[in-house]
Each structure stands twice: as structure tokens, then as C-alpha cells.
Amino acid sequence: MFWASYLLATLAIILAWPAPVALSRARWPARAPFTALILWQSIALAGGLSMIGAMLVWGLEPLGDNLVSAAGGFWNVARNQAPAGTLGVVHVFALSAAFLLGAHLIFTLMLTYVRIRRQRRRHRDLLGLLSSPALGSPATLVINHPAPVAYCLPGGARSVTVLSDSLLDLLTREELDAVLTHERAHLHQRHHLLLWAFAAWRAALPWLPTSLLAQRAVNELIEMLADDEALKHVKESTLVRAIAIVASGSPPPASLEQCEPPATRSAPVTVSALTELEPGTASTLEATAQRLSRLLTPLPPLSVLQRNTVLGTSALLLTVPPILLVAPELLG
Image (cartoon, rainbow, N blue to C red; front, side, top):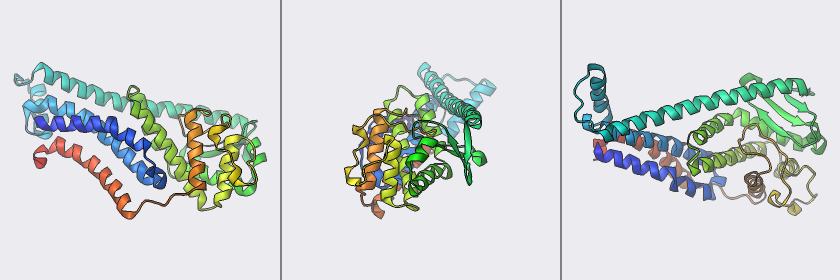
């Protein structure tokens, strides 16, 4: 079990730095956003499990050949006060670090959930005072705001889509349908759960630069998924114009080819309740530019072989850490 701790530590390092950096710079996720989301989740789960598992296996190594038998030995020491002479200071330190990191991750996940729920509750109370239902669509609220605003507020059966009256003045009926379909796709596909998990990861490990990379990548990918859902109901040109209007605050040129990328304009004033990124940041501008570029010059989807390779890698990432923890001899 000793060498298993080193393999887990190596995997944790790879998944904490080079793998997320390489994936955040890759271009293929735009061709398969759903597949890329699965890979990002696998990296996060396997990375966290490997970090905790490496310290846990290292600390329990003197007590058994695998995690199950070693845990039994540790329980015997803790409950029956059996001799623990085989456990050195280094082992005790590793066990303490594993328990503390695991508790920190779980506590941060719960704390992030409570914080988000509290924010949404306050937000919903404000909407009750400052908004009015859209005609013919009680699940859509309209607020009086000079900026073009469109976002969704998750809440199960109480989920709503929020639009500003200034945005309604800028959009045609088809463009409004594109915006509503896009926002409702976020709700139907439960993207807020993904963002909650990655927001918790960033809050728990703020010193890890790749936690921010992962959060930004997931934000961009869910926007692409919502765009793909909107394309099933509206024309591509209609969706492009809607995105440009929301991003710039004014109607785009009549010719789509003349649309200036948002990265060269002033800061957009769009607001999304699903993202932690602040409107107007360089990341938001770049993400909007990538969405428009993806729609204007669509790339071919991944081949079956490429998609299966990514999915197989994701499955492997989720399989190897548990094997190394429970039955390391199987890989020997």
C-alpha cells in the first residue's frame, strides 16, 4: 500500500495543475461541451479523492495491506486502545491532514450551498417587490432597468427567468424566444448544480489557480450548451443577434459579418445569476466572443472515436483512485 500512496499523490498533482491547464487551453471542448463537462467533473472528483487518498493511505500503511484492512486496524487502535507503535509521527500527521482536508471540502460545499440559497432567497424577495410577470408567461419576470438584462433564478418549481424592460425594447419576437430558450435551458439542465460544485471547489482551494480555470471553463461550457438548445428552436442568425444585443446593449449591424466581437467593445452589462464572474470582466468579454465565434464559424463535432476516448478517460479517472485505495494489489 506504500507505493499506492505515491501513485495517488502523483495523480493528484497531475489533476491539480497540468491537466486542468491543458484542458482550459484546448479548443475541442467547444465542439463537444457536454463531453468536456464530464471530463471537468471527473478531473475535480478524481483530483480531490487522490489528494485525500494519498495522505490517508500513507498514514494507514503500517496497519494493513489496503484501505479496508488498515481502517479496521485503525478502528481497533482508536476504540480498543490497542498498541499503535507502528504509527510514527509522519503517519499521524498524514492522517490528520487527510481528515482535515476532507472535512474542509465537505464543510465548504455545505457552506457554499447555504450561502447560495440565502442569496437566492433575498434575490427572490427583491424580485417580488421590483418585478412584474410577463404577459402570458408567469415564470418570466420583467424588471425596470436601463441595461439589457437576462438571467434565470433557480428554485425548483419556483424557478423564474428575469428580463429587463430595456432588453424587451431591443429584441424582436424571434430574438426574445432565443433568449428565453437559452435561459430556460440552464434551468432544465440544472446547470446551477454544476456551478455550485465548482464554486465550492474554488472556495475550498483558492490557492489553487486551476480551481479558477475550472470554474471559468464550466461557465463557458454551460453557456454553449444553452446556445445549442436555443439553436433547436431559432435560427443561428437570430441567436447571434440576440447574444450581440445582450452583450452590447444595442442592436447589431444588419449584416452579421459586420458584428464587432464583444472583446473590442465596452464592457457588457449582461447579468447572470448562474455565474460567479462579474459582468464586464475580460473573462466575460472573451467568453462572449468565443460564443459568437462558435456560432458564426461552427466547427465539426468530435468523431465517435474522439468522444469515446474522452469519456473513457473520464471513466478511468473515476476508477483508478478507488482501486488504489481499496485494492492496490490489483494493479500490482
